[in-house]
Length: 87
Image 1 (cartoon, rainbow, N blue to C red):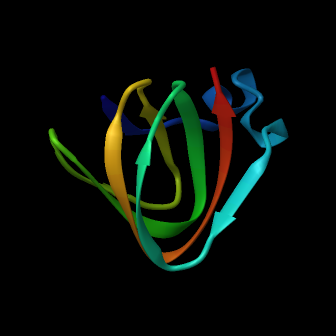
Image 2: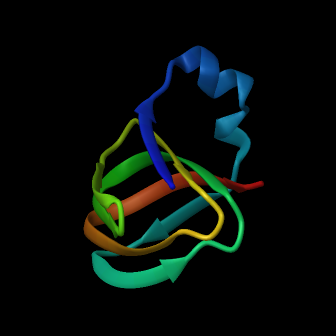
């Protein structure tokens, strides 16, 4: 339900990630449910995503896919800035 990986500059260009909107959020902890699949590329921050399948640590440079239907808790430990796109 969650995929976290590093991607190359080439893949960033191919996906046109730098043209996606930017989302920012301060240090906080909150539950969320994904109604749609979301792709995001983290520019800043530190987050731990807690789900039924485990904990996922996310840091700058990570490309993350949150699958539709995912229920999780965001634990933002350092303020976040990320590009995002809903599919």
